[in-house]
Length: 172
Image (cartoon, rainbow, N blue to C red; front, top):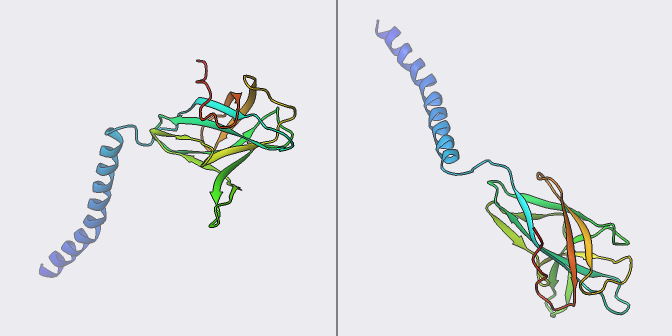
């Protein structure tokens, strides 16, 4: 009887430990989900959009967007398109060399954190654009922002003079 008892105890231990671990993991995930919106999809919106007017012979300028994500999952801005540009807009990041010179470095995507947002700025992330024609302050330029998981957003950015840090808020 002791041999049978030892075998049953060993079998119960071999099965019981993984079952207990799975149960604890499931309970933890359930509590995490019940505690908020964990796992809910991203919910993207644009609250500000502006583009700098280009000057002189400079063929490129920059567009800036303030993105909000009140969903429970982060998302990535992966592409920006516009019918008003001669070349596809490019996501880029402002960089500085050790000697103090500035340059733009293309980036493939930009993360928009869950329950947070992203504010593009001249000394950070922006969108490099080449206007088809001369844009004047107050005009609006059409853009489509595409995300890795969320649906695309159609946006109209107002043209402002360089150095203006904020465009006007978007109309509801």
